[in-house]
Image (cartoon, rainbow, N blue to C red):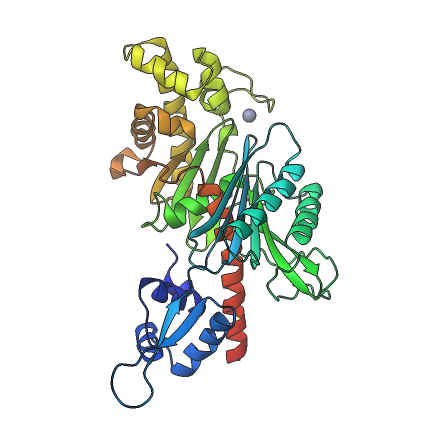
Length: 413
Ligand SMILES: [Zn+2]
């Protein structure tokens, strides 16, 4: 997904070693860098325990060649995804593989309380399964807009500082504030995600915060349905409808930190008034709640059952097809502006209702440019319910990867 020219050398070493063990000579040849440059980047990775060296005698005289391998048991970042119903937390290794995973019902508590409990449960589970939980960075996806939402930042800062006390990437704040003092930085936001750093006993913990839809889109881009493509438009269809475009090294969270509000684009001909105050928003016909209300079903599973019982020209089919066509139209407008490789539909509806994805696909392509015979593929999300938590861990990793790139460039200078 991320072009190698944009990836830090540390990241390229990690990915090479994830495929197979290698010697320093082989690595420097494979990656096209000098031994000196390679060794600089390796020193950091080895100091942090992500890369281990071992020497095996090959039967010949002299010192046996040193073989480098990735230690997949070492924790790197944590990802937390809080939806309105459930919180999920993961701790991942240097290549994003899940080492620890926990889940918690939200049940009408403040998400700040849920975040605190979830972090505690995650740490306890890490200790139980024998994973050292000292992660470098924590990514948090929340179900609310983050920018200008000071309570979100304050809560996350306090909790991460308390729960992960010995954690931290040694990175100075962008504005040069001294470490060791809790401080929020208004530094660069390279990934579109909002970061802050927490000073804890002379170190700082990098925390990346963004909307949960953005985190889910990142997970999808790295490990899911969009793994092999350079760009995607991710649309999350659940209680609301959020969207996010991911291109290499960049997610669009927008300036207000809401996942882009595809759900509030107006679709011609829709008569309903949206809770936002406008008439004809996509969410008035295509959100999970709107579809359930119109069809009389209590859950998406019940809706799927009704569709099976009913003939294809029945009323429930018409409700779902109208939703799919509206999503297709809104998505087509987004595609005309952003030109992504594919469109990925996340959430329970595309998963449970088999014709939904194909109906969105058909509708979307109708609204593109007919003369171009332009066909943008629409697929169902390929991630399970852990996608957003893994995406949050990835957002935290990307922040660190960028830090590595800066550090190596700094050494060169
Ligand atoms: Zn609206």
